[in-house]
Image 1 (cartoon, rainbow, N blue to C red):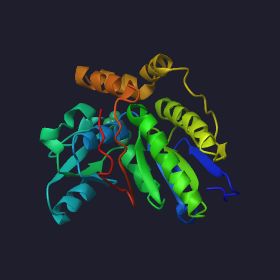
Image 2: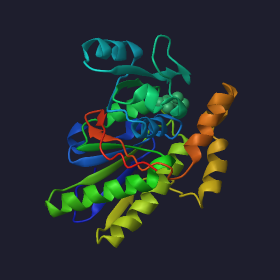
Image 3: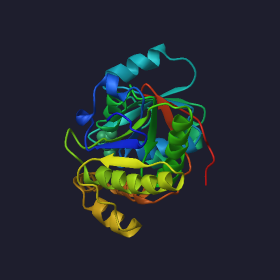
Image 4: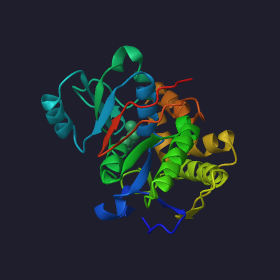
Length: 262
Ligand code: MLT
């Protein structure tokens, strides 16, 4: 994160591996975006009453976490898009119903999304963001930025796209551009200047344009090839601002905060 000079410095990273090292994450906030499907799923899960989520790099590490954890825990995630054998839930937003997840801590391991949370775990705060909760996320992040400024804390913002296996994913970059565009305007209205660094930030013209672009993305095509329930996940991930929940936390652990749901 570039040093703060009175304005909020926003760095957009199209994959987690471009993130700055630990010491330069420390006072930043991190918006983590994995539209298909991890951050969309997390927003649905928290809307359904999940208490917390922790991230793991491998299914084995998540299973070890389950042995140590107390309370209601659920093993969640995917490999190659499919549910992991022996796990409680996959990575489909629509699986995360109140009946399944209310009051539970989710031990989450997914191919790209979980790694984005782990890679940005040194940030002061992390938010799980997709198209489904983008507007609510803008409000949450603007509130955090205003608080940091009032307290005289130097703050930067990392926008972390999960990408796909180390490469940029168009659905994440598009969502990042969408969120950053709104955020910069929202900050300006609050008297906070921002400077954005990052390549290829082209905000979508609107929900239809975004949906058309995301449907053509390699990961959307892949998910559709797995069957109709995965095609439904793609469509669910494209809806703008249907949730007001923004899962947030730090250290690759999110916990339940605002649950004002539509
Ligand atoms: C991931 O974290 O890689 C994903 O969310 C992939 C998916 O389940 O579609």
